[in-house]
Length: 180
Image (tube, rainbow, N blue to C red):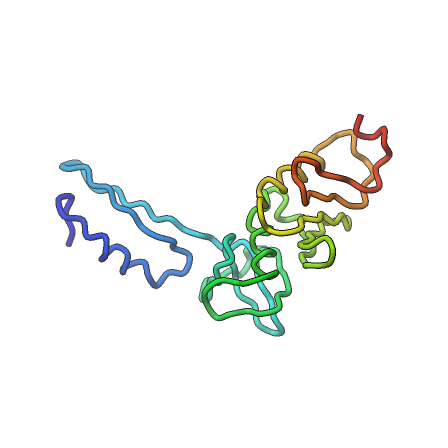
């Protein structure tokens, strides 16, 4: 019932309010040609588990209750608290921020995600290679640093990657001459 001359943002917002993956909707009228509607979403990036419950979580830590993720192959993480809606908090939120920023090619290589001392968030890749992230702050930068190290053709021995300071990533188990 809207026209390009009279877009009602409140009605658009109400129409998508029941969809947990939708962040918001924007409408741009181009009279007389038409109306462009942009839906901004937050897809699930992790499956948070607590006991026998599991819920999909978005990259920003939002609980996406009711979203079907069967067959999505999402990384799973045990959390200390699993709210029915809203945001994860504390260390659980840090897990979501790190997993939410993982580059798509590395997502399927995640075998474990946990929080431990003193490394903070630790993501273990297939082959038992742990990556120490610290907090979820600057997670995309930390993943970029880890991906650059993993992509090095000169790296053939590795026991861990530490990207808590992404400008100075560290590796363990590599011979000093390996990265020259």
